[in-house]
Length: 458
Image (cartoon, rainbow, N blue to C red; front, side):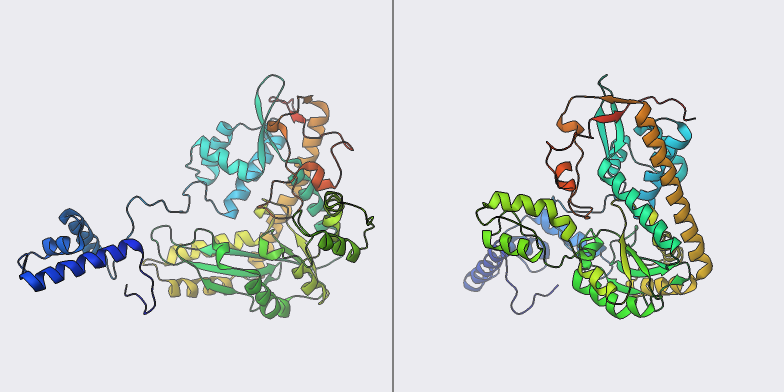
């Protein structure tokens, strides 16, 4: 591809240009060095590389349909993980499969048992180690019992956020408020490296929000479609496409992606100036002594910042008499728009033979326009069924742990990570920081774990 007028050449390219310059200068002074018909040999001599390398480059160019793409051999590149890089719909299937073991199998699942069940349900082809990585990403942990056996349980912080979400959405439905589910996804080709399409939309039992579809051509070099979105793009979509189509007094359900959670007046970090910490505490009407040192001020901030969080998205929607409800981390299965994405992707896969991004965008718009109240009512009913299953599962887990718990010594293997934000990417904060208290104030809840074999639930 021709370089722009002001493109900067790297050191290796400059070295090659110098080699070509010297070769031509020598031919100018001494005459033809290599016969003109030996093109590849002349190229190798001019550039200072081997003839074999020139032959490989020429072969790559001849195999290309249009403009050849040259890649550095041996360079490690981030790519989509074929097995562990699964979409939100299948993540939800795996999470529910784990929870169903509590209800149907009356015992904790092993990775081997899960692998067998998932192969039957979603044709999962990965190894047990790949499945273990997926489960870890979904918030499950392995802990040791007093018998040195490792068992798999879900992080307590994630359970808590799920329980609170289920309580809130039940309350909103009881009040008769419309529930609108927003989401983003990415449509690409599993057969080629063509440019994909980022899609943003929202829907409810009545169907997709009118004129709410946003499509963006994705960056083919990025392996995460979220890189193609930011808070400014998302806010513009909310103001210009989502808000005009929302029913009155709606509740908008979103996940915990960073551009959903941009804070207004975020809390200072531990590295902030003392005056900034004092100013923030003063604005939040939190009492502090003037003689407090920075670590003491920051302790106050940590203990209160969750209560003081205000998000830009919430403010925008609240101004129009709507509320925001955030999904618990790692729970795409609670958002029915994931089922809509699955249907759209299937439609594209069935229709596209030769990948073309403009054709794909037309197919996405076509399928979205075809999905009305009937489809969305079915999606929402399935999501509510999943909600009920989680409610039952959480009760069963509580009952089982009341009767079958064992306490083991504290270790890094047994620590629950509680996030002090709603971000799914942030899992480094401690349990005490999540609740805003010190470890001396409460006993550790992370020491209590399942035993491997559980009796039948009455």
